[in-house]
Image (cartoon, rainbow, N blue to C red; front, side, top):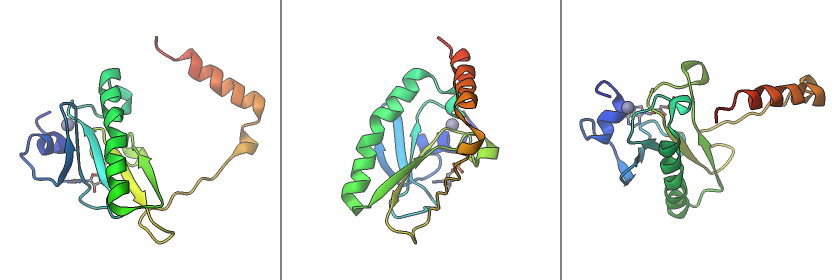
Length: 141
Ligand code: AMP
Ligand code: ZN
């Protein structure tokens, strides 16, 4: 897509620090890293977000994810890694070409805070069953 930042990175119009590339994906250093080794993995096919990602693009993207994740792990020996993908401005997406953040973790003082505020009380089994039913009813073949 001609006005897409990450498409321009893929075709070299905008410089990046590439760490991996194959026929389907491109991985490069996030310019504002949360931690040492924070890498973005993107499909070469432009898709705005997960919702509009074709199955083959998803398959090829995730096929490369362990390779890049393990390279980060071998390079820096993190204690863990979060993979994050923001879909939609309200969910924190700022670049509208799908990207998977690979964020290695080091300690409590690194650059990522993840807070899970569980709300089990709002989702007893009967409610959760209805939620599951609604999702299943909307699965496309
Ligand atoms: P998100 O907020 O999930 O859409 O993430 C977008 C990410 O792209 C941010 O973490 C930015 O730091 C990163 N980013 C933006 N521009 C560039 C660039 N030119 N090169 C590398 N990373 C970038
Ligand atoms: Zn793009």
